[in-house]
Length: 433
Ligand code: LLP
Image 1 (cartoon, rainbow, N blue to C red):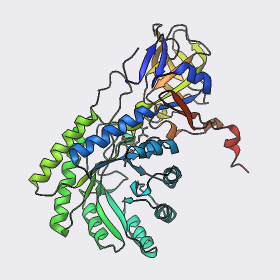
Image 2 (cartoon, rainbow, N blue to C red):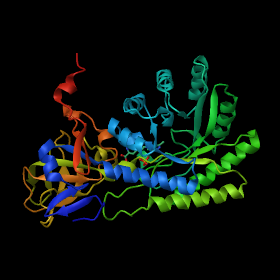
Image 3 (tube, rainbow, N blue to C red):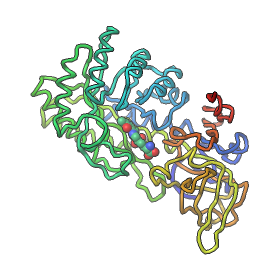
């Protein structure tokens, strides 16, 4: 069997995930099904919490990017591991609050918050706003004033770093829709304005460069730029940032050929450079925040499907169609992302049948992942597992074609529970008049 994540095992030809038999779980709950492993999520959180305190210092911390996977159970798990969380919408804030998450540990993002969002987040008691633009800054200052509070913020800056990742997830470049570019002087102007806002407490700066990155070099370059900017603002306005958020972005392995990334060592490398740069620039090192999403949940999730049909188009190609697809995993369609796939009950059979794994949605682009191989005799009723689907699958799912979204099952050692129940077709029409 492929050697992708340590939570996957072949026991007598049957896929085990997080120590549990996936054939039995598929039987118990039905397919399509998202399965997540609590212990993997916890282990990933611990890596960040420990490494950040050890290398960046006690007041540094990781802030889970909720957008990667958001439901109540996730907040209970990451909260108990001491993580903060970033939310980008009232929906994510509401989910966190409903789960009893400590709202003072929420950072509220979004590049276009309207007055409703601002009021909602203040009511919910979020700790920080990550302010993206001047309109937001002034609206927040006004609303905070009316409500007699002083709101903590970070300013989102674009450091002007171009990452070699796919277009849709590049965010650190100067012409990004996110944040205040440093290069054009917009960032400096924003600091001046924020310092003049009576009801705003500027805590520091935020940047996010991109996603699915394997190279610490981009974080190091971002850290350099952010520290240089911090010094410049000290010299200009006598203001020293207390916190610098370097965003999320560490990559995960979708395939055996992807590099193995040692998060702890990467954090150490960035921290060494960060402290060295602070020494050279003669500045007290601000606390550092990182915002991992994908690297907390991706390898903690798999998706189970049942094969509906196998189509052999002689002389052309083969398709294996399953009972899910772009509604539960649109990432191939959006980004051309590909996945590793296993036959849940036939791991000991050679996987020599080349095919595209496709969904049941009424669209040719509905491909779960192309060019995979399954056992030669793959047939209707077989179970397949798509690996590394814990990030940006459930959270990006839709009701296209009015298919209900799958349930999310959380396994934890010997126990399993429903974290999100299966959506029904009645749920889907429940808002229709
Ligand atoms: N912080 C900010 C401000 C972000 O925009 C993001 C991701 C993160 C943190 C988390 O990044 P991560 O550690 O997960 O790479 N839907 C795409 C990914 C979009 C990422 C958007 N921002 C996908 O499925 O690949």
